[in-house]
Every structure is written in C-alpha cells, then in structure tokens.
Image 1 (cartoon, helix red, strand yellow):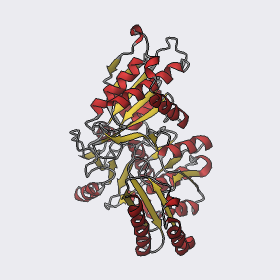
Image 2 (cartoon, helix red, strand yellow):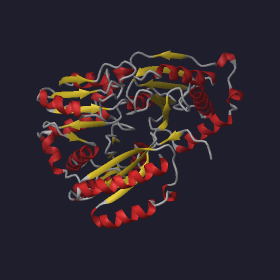
Image 3 (tube, one colour):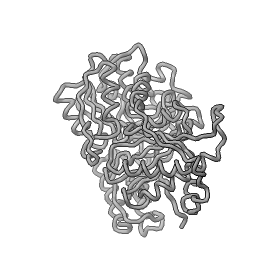
Length: 457
C-alpha cells in the first residue's frame, strides 16, 4: 500500500509517534525547502532566497516540532521566521501579506494536546494543492533528501518576529466595516486555551466590546480540554449568567467558531452560513447567489436557502474542499457545520474571529439579536455518532454493511438521508443520519455504528 502522510487537513497524529516525530518533521521541512528552492523567484525579487513562516498553537509538542521543521528548511537554504502562537488563518494571511514563499502551522486543530499536525500554506495564503502534498510525500519516503543539502555558506537562518500578533489583530479588525463598532455589546469569548488566547480578546476589545474571557490560560496541556468550539456549554452558561449579547467559542487553532445567542442557545456553522448568506443577498454581495457547504451540513440549510432563492453546493468534508470549490466557481461564502466559515472577500481559509465579526456586523446592520436572526433556520433532526476504529477498510466490503444501509435508506425514503465516512483527522468513523423522527434516526445510526465497531474496532 502506498505510504501517505497528508489527510483532509494536513499531516496529523500523536506527538512523538509516527508521523508526528522530530525526524519526520525535519524531512518534511527539507522536502518543502527543496521544492521551494526549485521554484522561480516570485514578486520580482532578485536574491532567490526563500522564506517560510512557521506558527503554532499552544500544545507542548509545538516547541519540539518547530525546531525540527526549521532545521529541515534551513538545511535547504530557506530562511525561517517563527511567529509563535497564532491562529491558523493568521499564517495564511501573513504568508501572503509578508511576501513569504510559504507558511506552516503546527496544530492539530480541535484535537487534544497530545496530538499535533502540520498544515502548509502557499505564498498566496491558500493551502497547498494535492499535487504538492504528493510531491512532499514522495521526497520524504524516498529518503534521498540529504543529496540536496546546500553548501555551508548557503544554510538558512531562523529568527523570531515579534509583531505578528499585532499584524493579525489589525487585519481581523479591518474585516468589520469601518462605520461599525462593538461599543455596548457584551461578549463571552472562549479561546479554548489555544492559539487565539492573546489575539482574539484584543480584536473584540479594541473594537469596543465588553469581553468576558474564558479559556485564555494555556499551559501546554489544556488546549481544547472541555473548552472551546467542541464544548460550547461553558459559554452557554456564561452568556446567561452575565446576560451577554452573544457568545463566541473558538477551537484550538481558531479556524472555526461556534456561537451562542442571547438566550444561551448554540449557533453552529450551518446557522452562521444561513444568517450571513441572507444578509449578503439582501446587500447584493453574495456572488453567484450561492453558498458552499459539505455533506455534513444539515438539510435545514438547503431548505432555508431554497426558500430565499439561494443555491447550495455541497462538497466533500474539509474546509480545503470548500475553498477549492469557491475559488473554481467564484463563490464568496462557504463553510462547514463544524464552524469553518470562509468569507473569500476577507480570508483564504476558515477564520473563527472573522466569521464572528461578520455575524456581529449582521446583528448591527439589521438591529436584531442573534436569537432573532437564527429563528428563520429550522434544523432537520440529525444524529451523529463517532465510533473509534482500529483499522480503515472499504466499507462496502464489511459484511452486512451494504444491506443495512440499503434498508435504512428505504425506510428514510425522501424524508431523510444517511452519510457514513472515516474521519480525516482521527481514528473514527462518523455515522450521520437525518430524518423527521429523532428516535428512529438514533436507532438507525446506532445500528450502523455498532456494525462497524464490531467489524473494525
């Protein structure tokens, strides 16, 4: 079987275990550096020296891996600039803004501290294409990278830059229209003890909001630990306790956001897409009258958009696929139910802070509470079960699987759907069922999950 490093969102795994080991990170750095060295000088430069930014979140292993990546890049003659903890979308922005040749983020996003990952952005701020990922894999596994090391006089330097946080804060603030401010708004903000723990509070406070901050005490171990976008319960309670106008919960690398309305109810990525799409259409700013979503989005999104004359295009799961579809077809808004929201007019990837600011702008423009804005969205009952597995196999070959799926699809008819896939970032199989009867779809989902657990667990 062909060896593979990249999943749906970069390389990811448990720290100090394959593939997230220092030696493999060094090889990835070398492979990246070698490929960059072969590319023509961009933007009219003459020196031919390549530069790569490296950012990270707050997990302990980030220190180890950034040094390994830097060494690999330096050995290929590439200059490295370390920016420290910064949201993933911040690296996409800075790679483009600072005229770097690439940007790398060390983060496992919403995973626990013991995992880590490598996400790579190109000079244009977008995640690198599949072809480049495959070329990095080829170079790493051929194990001939030392043949391409530069001469001693051409080894690259690594330095830390201190103003990256400020640059990102200014960029994010500028995505809120200049005639709007957040004065008078009380916001509960949960930073998940992650990459946004400094910049996110600054963004909303500098725009005038009163901010009650949660999850801003990272210690290397507590990133995403019962806090942030995967655990919005704390924010729901805090919104009610402090009578806040809105809650904002980010994940560990702040590329996704889940919000909480003034009643303490969760507002997920589908709701955010619907709210922003309706407003953008009203302002004639929704390109091609289309929203891009993934197969995991609730059919309620389709219904809400259809009733307002907006088209929904679905892609495979992963914000990278959403962005690819948006770029190819000139769409301006897309995202995932999990909270990756892409405003192509502002960012090159999902950005939790930018998405939250866009929702706040809609609230201010329309003079409505978040609970009022989300009232137009009616969720179809949906059940999602994540089952841990020890192996990945073609689901069609699992005994009894095809028959069970066919039976469930027949029972659901046109009033629901079932969608099963392996996670691209964790050893899980995800079983999603939608339908009108919550009890029945729960039973359907459990039956599929149990079958796969027995076969693959």
